[in-house]
Length: 336
Image 1 (tube, rainbow, N blue to C red):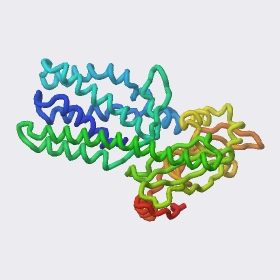
Image 2 (cartoon, rainbow, N blue to C red):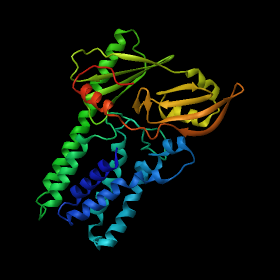
Image 3 (cartoon, rainbow, N blue to C red):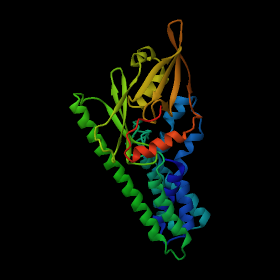
């Protein structure tokens, strides 16, 4: 999730655990710091664009490692504020702020390696978009009331914010399951119930959802809103060249992306370059993570240093207008 959500969640956890035992501002500040610490791995350059993507949310998001970090951070906090008598409470508060960071990230489609160092499997539930105001605002508002009221009278608002945000997470999983059932039902009627697909929310909401179905020669993209009048999902077919991967068996970046995306990628030859797109983030034809991985020289594919493309693209007003209309059930095709 975005940094503001992680900061707010960490601060809310800190305040909830510390309660009346220390100043609310102390609990909020240190909880917020702990809640954002795991994402400091973004400042580390792992060597190239694919490594930077696939090693983000890895060791720094391992639940065991963060659990071991909690008492060390607690020693620092207790020393600064001379509150060693509150060690166990500070430790619980900071552990919760650290621990919930990767758990929240796991609800996005990106992939979070929460079981490091025992397993590098990227957990990607995919029920939450990376930024969702309906999740973040209850936390921020609850904290705002709590910090603005004297004598701990605002603690109940912090608790309310946490409960509402947790309920919204639960709703996102339920909503995703409902959409997955609709997709599976439609695929079964079409005679392809075995087709692999994923369902993830469109930006900033959990009402309109994006679906990608993998096919032998490419993939299909469709959208579904709970306000749709027609419950049949319209899919647009998109081309890919999966046979290119046979020429990239020894290309580390290509194989790494195939693993990290859990097979939800497209690969195409554009001029003399092999370009791989992570289909999980973005939408056709614009994807957040798209990499040039190899070059065809005299009929032979040669690995090159991965280059991420389209990093500076801005969302257009037309796309935002379409998203709002799609949430409301307008089934007009998206701008391409």
